[in-house]
Length: 371
Image (tube, rainbow, N blue to C red; front, top):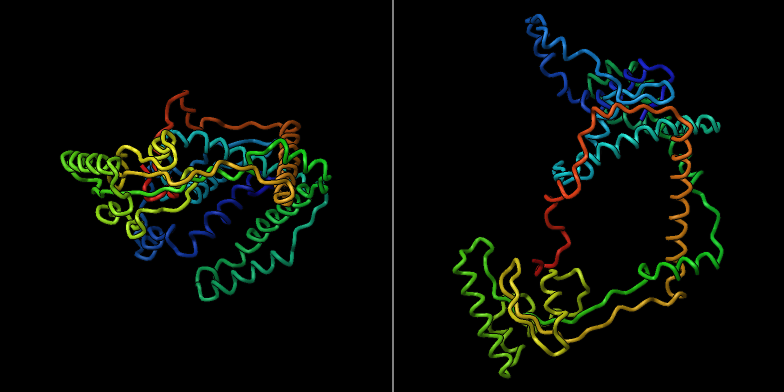
């Protein structure tokens, strides 16, 4: 994000660097204009078209310097692209994302100003290396050749300000090494971070059902599963029944899935396993893949790792928390001293409590028997 002393130049820089440089080289952003000019058929702008070129009110003003709406817009687009699959934002998340990105923009303006106040110089060699790579990458691009002289100074300024921001962040986050007592205290007060989760060794008999199957097909599978449970509880071998009936890859091993920790199976499966003891089997459990019957072979309780075995990890986690705190404290301090005005008309209203919390779908790390 750019921080400039002149409001107008800031807008020009944003447009030239963020928008033009990313899209302009391909010609996509100006394809319609190019066709119009080449054909010589330049139409007169309508009042509606002309109104679109009227500058929007600034997104925010920080210590008298405007942050152009396009700064905010481009950062929002980048955040959506990088954080959400196919750029689709879960329901109810847009409003909070807007405010998060808006705050990040304001913070970066303040932090770049702070970096300059501290006399931090950009890594000019690193900046030049990036610029040289652009020259090499676009050496045969006619538009780059034509406009390079104009775009290069703007791009250099953007890269230099990014550089001082990163240097400031690195300097601020360089916290002193914690003492042994501090590391030990962190371990003692954060046992949950150093605990091996409970593990269960499970065997399964899976009667596969296509998720799109009719209700009758699912009911038939459940009926068959109940019959298998009855036979198992009557003394039939689980391993033999798994080899005969199960469609899970573990069937050839008698249904043995090995040790699994909580989260690797669907909540409904874990709930069923929690109700039984080692050696017992569950009632039929409906999963995404079909109807499963699970046997609990063994249970390993959660165990807290000994301090000596996780000391380095505890030290690393503590260092990260300390450095993040110092960085966040600096941002809060700069905000408190700054005159910040954000045009919240650019934000969507925050959803009311209990609204807009759905639509996130299943996570990608669900086990194959997730429900």
